[in-house]
Length: 533
Picture 1 (spheres, rainbow, N blue to C red):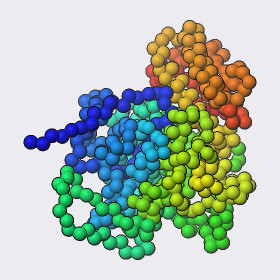
Picture 2 (picture 1 turned 90 degrees about the vertical axis):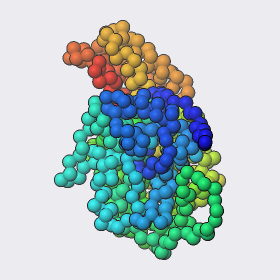
Picture 3 (picture 1 turned 180 degrees about the vertical axis):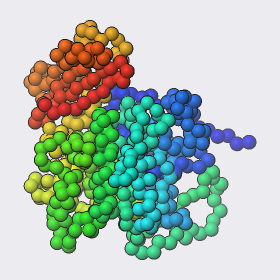
Picture 4 (picture 1 turned 120 degrees about the vertical axis):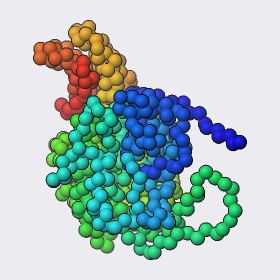
């Protein structure tokens, strides 16, 4: 007789006021022979996935495919998913880590406390032919982003009130506590060119020995992964990547305006960057010009909110890719920096508030394991240098005198009022809190009494932000205002059961006052709109 002990974990309760939760969407295999922990199964039951009206098949529940799984520790992720066993080649003789697993690992190691993981399938062999990559590229991207559309390939329509049809990013619609979304496999999925190692990769030789029996066979990580290049995008790959980021941004813009996409800026293929051997500064000038030409960086002062634009307050891009003490299990020893950035943002939100920058000294204690990067930024050349101009739009990791640090915390928004990452996260936090307040009174009679009640609730919330230093202004009156009365609603709104609240705030580092419009209906709950006034 054998005894199996399972560590009891409390059910992860959702908290709509948190600003430190990241949702990871990507490819990773389910670990075999591992039953679902009792608390996790209870979580899926509570979500309606097991026996609710949108229940999934038992095999899908056990495989955790296309289901939101809330995790409060790296150990639980490691227990559930075979993140370290991605086939390097089709024969499976050697393996590497998955980009999803590496990002979740970095998220928790940098200070993240809660992650939501949506597994959309098993990873494909890393050393895959270019023809197969091209043939399956659209299918793989659509598992993460069903709305991804190219010419002649219409997008899968999103059904907000049919969770049984949700795929990938669609699950964000039902995740009220989530504040970030990360898709670490996106660059790899957009790669057209076959990835060819610089030397022949052979499986490591393991001597025959007697070992203690275990439930799972040990997996050997190839120590020659440094000779396998990380994915790099040519012009076709960058075009696909931009369409994917645009698809994600458009979904957030329409359905989840309190969530920010945290993504890695892909490494460029030589035909993309046109890098010569002149030096790092020249290479980064080429990269800056290329990003401006294709529309990743905009300087025209617009909002960057059109459906064809990557420039947006909903997007934070991280660069370059990092060599860390843990990244030797990845090709070229490089990990995408999105998981690192998401972890720093989560830790900053929990410790100091979502509205404060996570760049500079704050990131130093959690980046001491960074040993290098690809490429290495030529930091310290001044604000008007190529890397300084990149840092106005891209979150740059670079080496300082005391070690590696995040040097800029920005969104890709063209309008400077939305450029600072803390301002965009602050608005997301306000929207999330206001949505929770609105949802609690959605069935109350719509009238002056309810307007005053909701106005007081939101004013009390904003007063707390002001006292913590989130807003500029010598007084609360200068810092923010809340209106919910006949001036914010027409008779048509009242007849339709809509209640509209207008919030105007002055973020501490913003050059403009930012206005948020909240639309409460008795059928759809609280909808939010960001505006710049």
